Amino acid sequence: KEETPTVFLKPALEAESVALRNVEYVAPRSVAMPRSAGSIAHRQGVGVRDLRDFAECPRKYEYRRRYAMPTRQSVQQWYGTLIHGVLERAARMRNAGEPIDADRVAAMWQTAWEATPGPKGRKPELRAYGEQSLRAYVATPAWTDRVIAAVESDFAFSANPGEVRGRFDHIDI
Image (tube, rainbow, N blue to C red; front, side, top):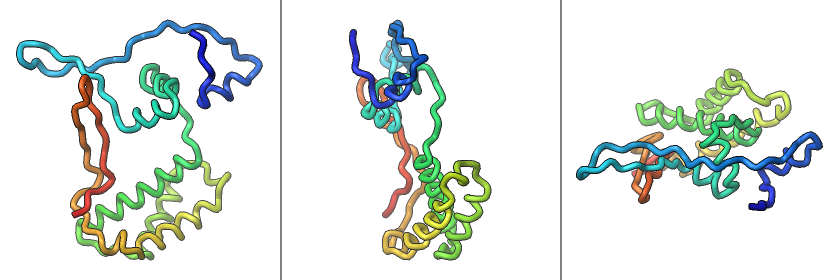
């Protein structure tokens, strides 16, 4: 069938050396579940990232999940992952009874920045911006008044005929 190129493929298709060809459809992999009521159920596991990828571009989902093609991380993804890691560590430390103030989270950010490979040379301003953002966040009631019950908790629920999996960043009480 004829398809309009997606946002994900458009840059590749604009290259002069790209030749289009039809690819045979292959059904997604399924996960065998334990025997239940005398039959074996097969469920397709789907994560929250899978749902986001599919909503953005079905081909992106297919290339990542079915063909396991690597994708390059954007600067925004790299930065978000770095910020997330610092906040996760800070929440775990806070749950263990350690005080986490602006100076402590700024020191954690600087350590993470130094230790993590990434596009730092292309976006050096993100170092100061990340520290400023983290300092501001830990001074807000969203951090100071929060009672965190759990950090990075997995979840799963059935969505017939499959399962949706994901992870909560934190659970507050």
